[in-house]
Length: 156
Image 1 (cartoon, rainbow, N blue to C red):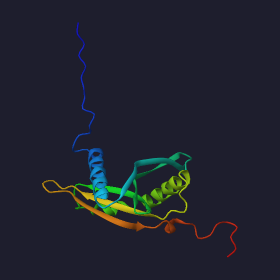
Image 2: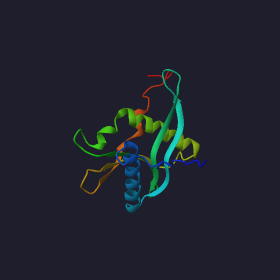
Image 3: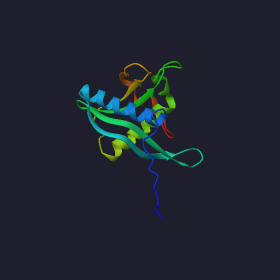
Image 4: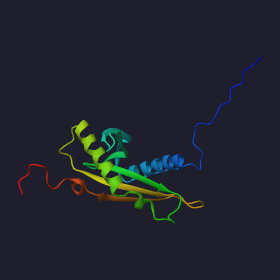
């Protein structure tokens, strides 16, 4: 008796959001390199704390790269259509806060406190029947937006 093994293609279906995201990140990385960025790491993940229920939260940064001497934390957003708002609308305040926390952890782990840094976004629009549209937005937000103005014990 012969056993046959079914092999499945482990690549996500071309229509799945995970495949779209992977394709967008690849296109974004290629675009960044063509703009002179030096890629450091992709899909950096690190625990950044606990949520209100005590569950550990993991932060992720899609791409960390150098633009000359500036360390860039880059979020990539890919969409098939801009019909319900472009990809940039998905980088909301909550997402910015999560990336900022993750970037702080990255800088602490690799001891890059004195290096200039910024938060960029690459949007990728892949509409059927047309070439991908890639846009780089440098300095989309700043870390100062999420710093506490006053800590307990501060004198006002």
